[in-house]
Image 1 (spheres, rainbow, N blue to C red):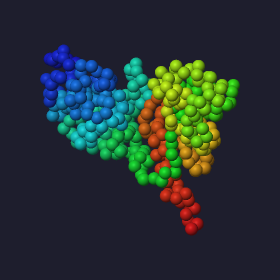
Image 2: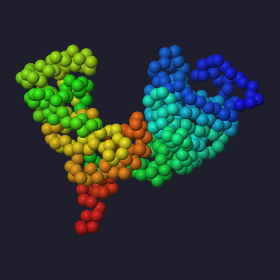
Image 3: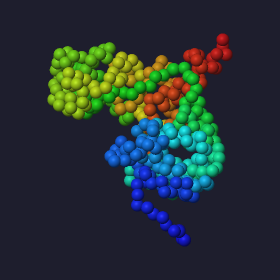
Amino acid sequence: IYNVTWDIQNADTLTIEHYNGRMDFVFGNPPYVRVHNLDTSYDTVKKFKFAEKGMTDLFIVFFEIGFNMLSTNGCMSLITPSSWLSSQAGKNLRTYILHNKNLSGLIDLEHFQPFNSTTYTLISRFLKGENCDKVKYYTFNGTNRSVIFNSTIPLQAIEIGGNFYLASEQELSLLRKIRTTHTYKYVTVKNGFATLADKIFINDFSFSDCTIDVLKASTGKWSKCIFPYDEKGNPLSEEQMQNHKQAYQHLLKHKNLLTKKRDIKNYTWFLFGRTQAIRDVTVNKYAINTIIKNKNSIHLEIVAAGKGVYSGLYILTDIDWEIIKDLIISDDFICYIKMLKNYKSGGYYTYSSKDLEQYLNYKLSEKYGQSRISKGNLQLF
């Protein structure tokens, strides 16, 4: 850059207003710090409008700072974590963008990580003074370091349920249906056991008393789990637990860890850290892992009544196994998960129980409507 009269100030960006309304171009790589980890700047940060929602990340405030700096026809481009597209902390920023229509382009770096951190990033470009009804959407090829144009998307199309999503307009239309269509609740999806001490409760024990078979959904591996609950999922008393000598003695050896590490009450030291999934041991269910890459990486397995699930999700339904299996191990499901853009290392994606539940209920409602009779068979009546 030549023939520039530099005006560099050694100051706190959070407080300086010297450049407001004066900058034709703003470029930045804001700091990736949670506001609650700040000491002296916390109160200053929370004064910004974009910092009013949730556990604000400091980088979101820099969007507001940059917008304030722009001149009448200014352009801003920032590289930041992509979390602002869907986080509670990014809600005010997304609302601002929808109202001002100043977002002109996005480059999603996807699984490529340009910095030495586990953060997944994107580059966003804003134009002040222009009415950007459409957004140019690009992705980044980390192998050959090239930017790939995907599509031009209407701004209103990327907003679904208050969050922003990036995909083709056709894919976004499907995602909107999955996210917003009223569906019949054919399935319920829940998280597996949370013992908060898996290495103590779960192993290949030589004894079987007071244990159940348990599946690690993330890997498909079966083990034994000490299960200090009755057949209805009610917790055993310590006196009852003592009747199961081998299991009790094993837990007793680790009482200090079970009590202090998990920060639970002393009289429940031998129980799981959380109650989730305990009462569903008595029913049949389908277990699934939550970190996937393609159809081959999906571990979907039947878990019979009397057995448990941990390190993953399980599905409760009376829909036949083959139907559920066909819906999940499919190109549609992989496409759906990729649209959510919850990246993990190695090219993998993750998803929540709600994500899976919405997908299955949408697909099953599309197949059966509000009844258990398929639309094809309705013609018989």
